[in-house]
Image (cartoon, rainbow, N blue to C red; front, top):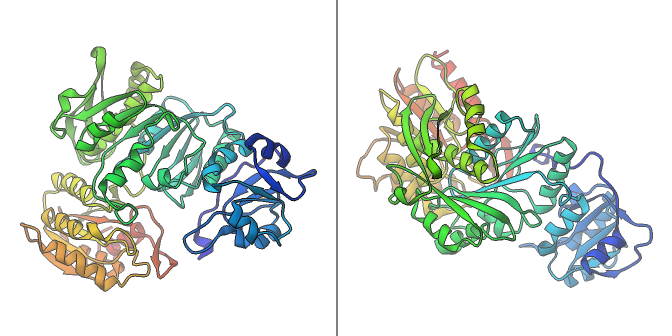
Length: 518
């Protein structure tokens, strides 16, 4: 299992820093001698400890990280940062102990100090929201590259350092990993970075020590209520990004009612954007998005802003919501100081925004047969937007294949089933990541939700997903479209804690070949 977990990217040539200087800088109490000790990295995980590291022991849900101080020392850690409880647990490990009341709370700034990420930082862009964070981040990075900058990316799908790309672990990495990533980016002369910021990242302080030049808000809808007691708490976690501690300026999309609440609650200067025909108060927005042309391979739109400024361009994805994401990215760049005319010239030279978004309404079929899209969407709102876009360019029937995550927000499952049924002609309910839940029970709940739809499609329950996609392809005809939602870019399934190798893209292509579609 561990071999399938992507590596943490760190600087290749770290600069050692004296532990004594760290304790002086942050006013840390010390147990043990620091004579001659230097550190070159920092981590929360014993499995990631490298020689010269500062190991950070924090209280977890099941145990305290300091209980593993022996393992950290054996792996090469030279000191441990922890609280009073952790100091007692680590007392026999033989490591100097740096004491702080809240180790996780201090981790971001300490990581920034160790990796020197406050020195000559790149332009930082952060995007939050329920849906569209990944798409906006990729579109941002794409435009930045078209403007001639060496870029970095941290998203649910991937981490990019210039041309280097690896699969991601978390939507937003731990703050120690984030600062290590930025230090590695500095070595590669990266000058602008797009970062996807989840609500959990804010709650668990994973972006501490960063100040974004511009942050963006896409939308808010039902998701992650397994992590938050209610919608207000979920919203508050995202709103925290719009404070001087984390960002200098913001761009807020008004396409959902929560956008106006972000504007009202923001503690930094913000501008607004809205999509005509999809936002109730679009005329109140400073920037307006007007959809001009929709096709199966692009969406063309006009973005109009203050002082008569406007731009007409296209992005390479289907759906008005993707045009809204691209427009949000453009306005974020304008807020960072890029001239709209320079952005327009770069996009015109390439025929629009150039970006490849893995697993976001990704077409994996050929010229003959049904169109098959693999998508990462896993919320009711994402289903509605993507199914609507697919239906618009499907002359035949729309076939939906999806499952739901186990051990994650179960409160959205009925609505996922209902929306999927309401917007498809054939619905195939299958498995996704069951984790430690019973997949039969998950499917049963999704079927209950599908039964609530006013429009009732032809419904099938098929397990496992390898069989489900073959059922969908077997039912499909020329002119039909299949949307397989959930797996997207991921290359594994989580079954009882084991990451089993698996690719929805490969399975879909193989199913098409087996059915005789080249």
